[in-house]
Image 1 (tube, protein in one colour):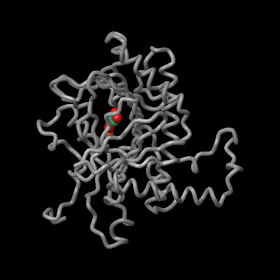
Image 2 (tube, rainbow, N blue to C red):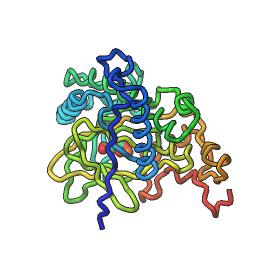
Image 3 (cartoon, rainbow, N blue to C red):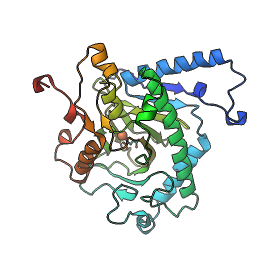
Image 4 (cartoon, helix red, strand yellow):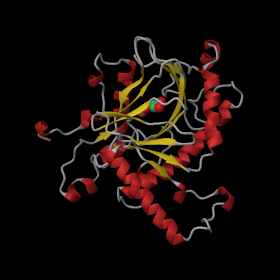
Length: 334
Ligand SMILES: O=C(O)CCC(=O)C(=O)O
Ligand SMILES: [Fe+2]
C-alpha cells in the first residue's frame, strides 16, 4: 500500500549569495539569522540523506531559464536525424564515455545520451547543432560543478567531519561528467528507462523535464520524484555511503518511461578521482565503537568493474557489480 512518503524539497537560499551583491554577504540578513537558517537547512539535508538518500533543492543559484533552455536544446538535439547525432560519437580508443551513445539493442533501458566532461577536456565531443547547445552545456557544467562543491561542503558539515575534509579528499575534478539523457516512450514490451541502480559517485544532480518518471526506493516502495521547473534532484552516491558507514544512503532509483512521450533529463555526476582509497571513516567506526560495514577499495577498481558490467551485462539484474561487493557480512568473518 502506498505510504504517501515523498522526498523533501529544501530551499538552499541561506547558502547562496545573490550575484547583485558582488559576492558580499547579504546585507539584508543578519549574520546570526543567516547562520540559524543554514543550521536548519543542514538539519533538513541530514534527515533527507539518512532517510531517503535523495532530496530536491530550489533557490540554488542556477537560473531557472538556463535550466529550461538546456532541456529544450537537448530535446532539439535528440530529435535530429541519426546522421546529425552520430557526428558526436567518440572515436575509438577514447578511455572515457564522452559523446553520443545509445543503450545496446538488447538492453531493456531505452535511452540515448550525450556525455561531456569539464570544458577543455580532450575526451569531449561537443555538438555543433543546435548552435547554442555546446555553450549552454559548458555553462551548466561549470555551474553544477560549483553547486556540487557547495553541497559536498554542506554534507561534510552534516556528517560532522573536520572542516574541508571532503573538499581536500575529493580535490580532483577530471572525472566529473554531465549526461544529457533522452528516453523513448514506453512500449507494449517494456517501460524501463533506466533499470534500478545506485550511483557509484559522491553526489549526483538530476534535472528532469516536466514528464517525470524518476523513482526512488524507500522502505520497499517506489516513490515518484515529481518534476518542478528549476528544481534539482540531489542524491548521495556510494562513496558517501561507504565513508559514512551507511549513515547516509546511496538509494536505489530507476527511471520509468511514460507512454506516448519522450523524456529528457540531465544527470551531473560529481565524482572521485580513481586513485582515491574509499573506506568507512574512523568517525563512524572505531571512534564510536561500530564495526565497518565495508572493506576499503580503490575507487578506480570499483568504477572499472561497474563499466565492465555495463559493456557486458550479467543476465540477472541482481548479479550486477555494486557496492555490496565490498560489504562486510557477518558470515564473512571479516
Ligand atoms: O534520468 C534520470 O532522471 C536519472 C538518471 C540516473 O539515475 C542516472 O543516470 O544515474
Ligand atoms: Fe542514477
